[in-house]
Structure formats: C-alpha cells, structure tokens
Amino acid sequence: MPEHARAWVHVGATSQDILDTGLTVVAVRALVPLLRHLDAAVAAAARLADIHRGTVQVARTLGQQAAPTTFGLRAAGWLTGLAEARDRLRQAGGGQPAQLGGAVGTLAALGPAGPEVAERFAGLLGLAASPLPWHTRRQPRLDLAAALGGLLAATGKVALDVGLLAQTEIGEVAEGGTGRGGSSAMPHKRNPVDSVLIAAAARRGPGLVGTLFAAAVQEHERPPVPGTPSGSRCSTCCTWPAAPPPGVPSC
Image 1 (cartoon, helix red, strand yellow):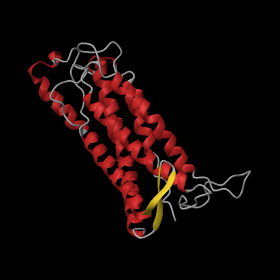
Image 2 (cartoon, helix red, strand yellow):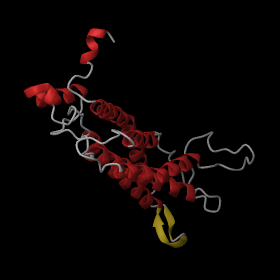
Image 3 (cartoon, helix red, strand yellow):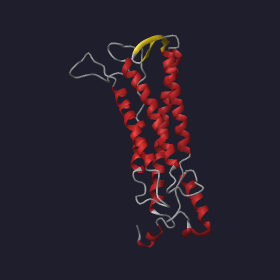
Image 4 (tube, one colour):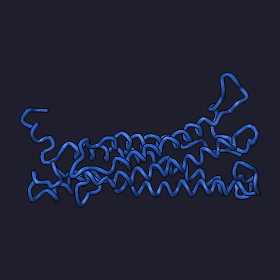
C-alpha cells in the first residue's frame, strides 16, 4: 500500500465495519451455490413424491411399524421441509446488510454525507443498506444463523430417513449414484455415506446457532471483541450445508 494512500484505506470506518461487511460479502456469495444445491434437492424430492405417490410403505412411529403410508408422502414431507428452508434462507440472505458506522456508530468522520456514503457503500457491494449501524444489534446475523440451522434440520431429516430405510433389515431405499459407499473389508455392504455426513452436520449445527444467539447480547455501542465468536460460527454454518445434496434414493 503506498504511504500516501494508507490514511484513506477505510477512512470514516472502524475495523468492525470492515470485518462485518467482509463476512457479509462472503456469506452472500456462499449462498449462491448453496441455494443452487437446494433447488436441485427440492426438484429431486418433488420427482420422488410424484413417481412414488402410489408406492405403499409401512409408516413407523416410535421406531415400530405402525400403519400403511406411501413413499411418495414421505418424499413430499422432505420436499416441503427443503422448500421452506430454502425460502427462509433466501429471505435471510437477501437481508444481509453492509456495515458502516464509524467508531461509535455516528458516522461523524464522514460529516453530513455519512448516511449517503453508507447507502452507496452498500450499493457498490450489492448488499442491503441498514438504516443504522448494527455493531451491537446482531439481528441480521441471527436471521442468517437461524435459517442455516433450519436448513441443517431439513437436510438432516432426509439423511436420517435414508440411513434408516437403507438398513439391511429394511432395504427400502438406497442412495443414488454408483461407486460410492462400498466397504473394502466387507464387499457386500453399500454404506449410505452421504446421509451419514449430512446427519453429522445437522447434529453439530444447533450448537453453533446457539453460540451466535448467546453472543448477540453485547455491550454499549461496540463489544470488547468485535466479530467473535459470531464470525467463525457463521462462516462454519454456511460451509456445512454447502455440500451437494445426498444422492437421490432409489426404491
């Protein structure tokens, strides 16, 4: 950085403005492939619900066989959960704002032009503009965390069902695709590896979401440690659901 430019690197802004805005940019960009994967998963569940609307299957309650249902109805439940999670995530992602408030949230260093600068700053980055700085008002992050947690729950439900229905004793579904899930020691096995990975992420996610909510109660105009632990937890929540959806089960 040339010496004459150093004083202007983020004039009028504070370090938390840069960290919060940077994380927002990363999160919004990460949602693009994530939502694309979700669209594919929703479409796959819709196909299964249509194809198997008449495929009779036993329903299970409390782990025991209960009464007849159809596999199509089960897939329709997956479809609804995934579609609802996608819509909530799209709404939360579209509302992630830029952060520009200056040292104590007054934009004093930018003078009367402060609000206009903040709005144009958000616009140049393709982000929502916030009516006020949110240094200690973390609702945008909470909305995103809650939506990601809901997505992990929806995908975890699919993964858990597939893993259980793929058990040897049941054998009603199998993960789609070839060349996956084989065992080097037991060649007769076909492990539901995608379902195992997704279910593991779904079980770890709530703890991260809870940490973000616990960290949202912050002091005065800015907390002692800005961005921590919300930054690392939020980025992790974005990463876990970003894997491609599990292979389409085949009856």
